[in-house]
Every structure is written in structure tokens, then in C-alpha cells.
Length: 168
Image (cartoon, rainbow, N blue to C red; front, side, top):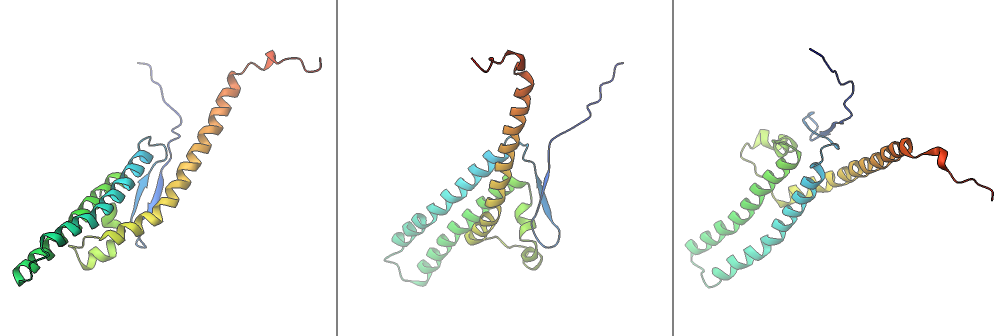
């Protein structure tokens, strides 16, 4: 049987440290879905965040005339559920971009003390404020590498002997 061994794999891995305890997730700029997942996830979380005030306003209107204790508690629970749903969805989105358990690792110190912790909207804003510039750098480097490799490949195929004579 003939055997073929490929010598080189150019796919890169980037280790993203998520806390000061050494927990990380790995991403690859060579993953053709990474940037689409990042942009779509970022947009989805932003859209979810924009929906929160509208939903809270609807709840406020629904309970506007009710002042008894039961109604106030019901209103408070309804408002809390809006925030909880946002956070649950945001965890799933971040984990779908960067890998299962990313949020758990990022907030490891909190989860160690409070296992039922669910990050609020501000926590996700902080996460994206830190990761977005890094993702932009990775994306820009990847695009530059592609341009450079493309030029190198094209140079091999351009017939150098068929240049126009220069001096007429």
C-alpha cells in the first residue's frame, strides 16, 4: 500500500486567557466561521440588550395601576425574568463563539464562591469590550497574511518573460 504523509499544517491556534488562574479557550484565525460567529453573536447580544428596556416598559405599563404587595412582587419577578432570559441567552451565544464553558471560565472566581451566578448585562459588555479589539487584531492580521500569500502565489504564475520591452 502506498503511503502519503503530509508534512505541514499551517492552521494556527490562539490561546485566549480568560482569568488569572490560567483558564483559557482556544480559537483559530484559520477557522472560516470564527469571524461570522463573532459578528453575529455580538450583534445578537446587542439586539437582545436593546429589547430589554422595551420589555421592561411593557411590564411597567401592565402593572401601572396595581399597588398591592402581590402585584408589586409579580411585577418584580416579571422584570427579573427579562434580565435572566437575556443573560441565559448571552451565555449560550458567547459559548457558541468561543467554546463551551467560556463564560464559566471567564467568571471562575465568582462561580467558585457563587455556583449559581448568572452574569448580568454589564458583565457581557465588559467581556466584549476586552475581546473585540483582540478579535479585530486577529482578523486584520489574517487578512494581511491572505493578501501576502495571494501575492506570493500569483507571482509564481505570472509569466515574467512576457514583459513589454521598456524603452521605445
